[in-house]
Image (cartoon, rainbow, N blue to C red; front, side, top):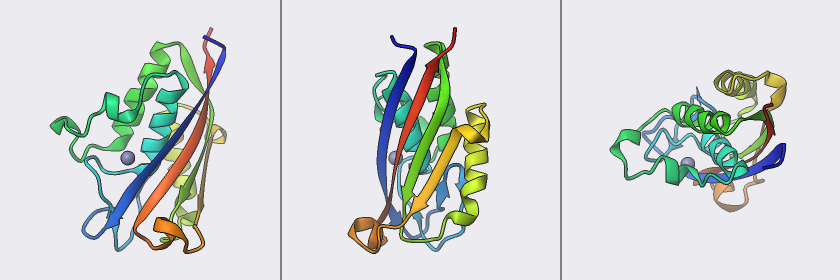
Length: 161
Ligand code: ZN
């Protein structure tokens, strides 16, 4: 395998009442939250998928199936750390990552720094290597109708020698 590998992740979760909104491991005050088997942290799922994808290790559903009761309401930070453990086992580490969350509301800007810090902590890297951005979809599509939140991410892994 080459010395650098790139991975891409994309995920969507539905917005519903009666659930917490957790993005990047940070609980964000909002009237709705994301539905899912785990804590439905769409951002961390995206990054986890990108990590696995970079080394062609399959996807988050393969490693952490939603049919497994063990992962019911699981903190997605645990899944991210496990996926990163697989990356380290293959002798790679994070170079940098860049992610975008698409949500019509709430405004995520006040939480971006804390989200980046949380991810950097879990991946044992500098915050400069973790970019998280948030945008709206200008009221278009499912994000714009506030039916769900999507996220995408690219990660670059570099070989440890
Ligand atoms: Zn997900």
